[in-house]
Image (cartoon, rainbow, N blue to C red; front, side, top):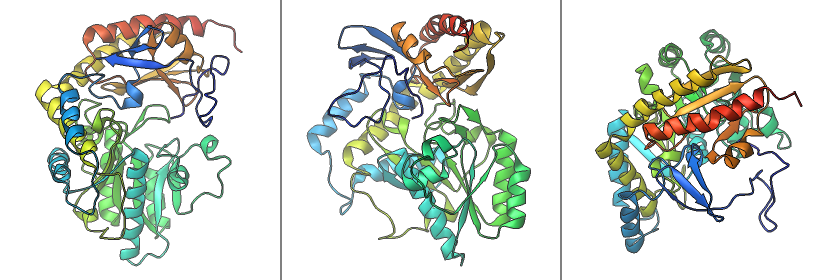
Length: 405
């Protein structure tokens, strides 16, 4: 999470470690795509818990299912079989065309798991110091390893020395990857977000992903696509890379998979599924019955209710409205993204819009300093998409005519 609120309106919580620039708002409850704070004010949620609340808030099908599971079993242990793991894994494999799943609790853990798979894959092939190609502006998490894979010097600062074993290239530049393939025999994998989230909603071009797939096949590398933020129907397909018609070897997931219940997954194909064995990796909370039920029910409801198709249709409407109201304005560099994962890049830092939007009754994110990020629940209606445009456009227009700070 890169968004930082305007320091003039943030307030610390005295007994909670001060690691977030929080707005002075405490939420009490939500319904659909709307949330209310403890003062009774209502907000249209265009943030979705940072692309987490797939089914919005208080979904009438999800809530009773989770209540049922809480009454039965919340946590057991991976010492024992968890039947819901097999049920959710089978669905994820069906949707992705891959064949094996490791469950964890967060996107960071999923990405750590992917990095461990890549290193073990390299060692199994006799490469003693395996290296992984990563990307400028990437964001994979804040552990020491995922922070090192991340392409943001600002969030890395103060945590050096970083983990070695990463080779960084610019996004959508296949020649740069081909040069690494020509000169570096230790590379074992390419690791990228299909659409960069925290880096500013930067999509990988479909032909670029196709080129990477060919290059990985030719070089014996793993293609690892981080779908933590852009997966689970957010772009109008189950996984964003499916627009390019490619299949990865490793795919980390999290965020929207549990509609708010913490869950992560590493989904693997034949080249990677047998890399880790008993004792190589593990987790206490990952794959617990409650999170597995949340994943099973989320995917079931999405299928029954056409939620993924809604993301495509309503996302296109939202993007068209933003382009109509903002696209030609001086100061708006680009409106980009797919489905309900959209970014509006301005020509200046715009963190102040976080608090101004909240004051107007709209929840958004600002990431990469200059990009307004919209990742609402996938149940967003056409009318609510129009309301997002109606609330946000005047704020952006007023901001762009202010004197530079």
